[in-house]
Length: 152
View 1 (tube, one colour):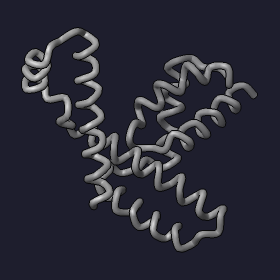
View 2 (cartoon, rainbow, N blue to C red):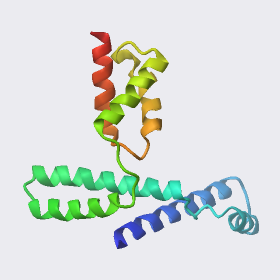
View 3 (cartoon, one colour):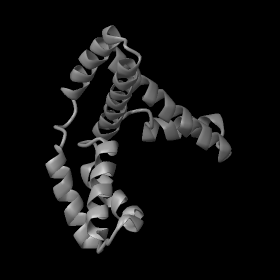
View 4 (tube, rainbow, N blue to C red):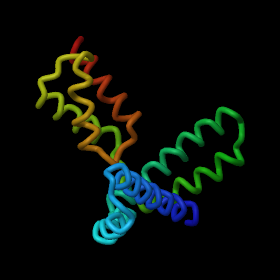
């Protein structure tokens, strides 16, 4: 739990720092910056931002698991899997490949995509439809496969 709270606090500090930097560049003096910050509170994360932090942490754990498996570090794989399980308990349920395929087919039909050359047209819409509920690598693989099928 501590690693998640630390990640959320780091994101809050980063957003607050970015806001202060932007206000400084805009030429606001100290009093104007304090007034703006008190009113807008850019360091307070909403639910979507916290979900984004959790999603990023989950992706980091998945990448670490892959790297540790390749390196033969089963002790670290186990540790990362436990942390990933803990993170996943706070994230929305992940879509399985069949649901992703269904969404991708719908988007391909809506956009009229014909083959792999239309990936840039399809991917942003599929990513938006699956945001936070599917791994980008899986989405990319499904979209690529469907577009290749359509070109064949």
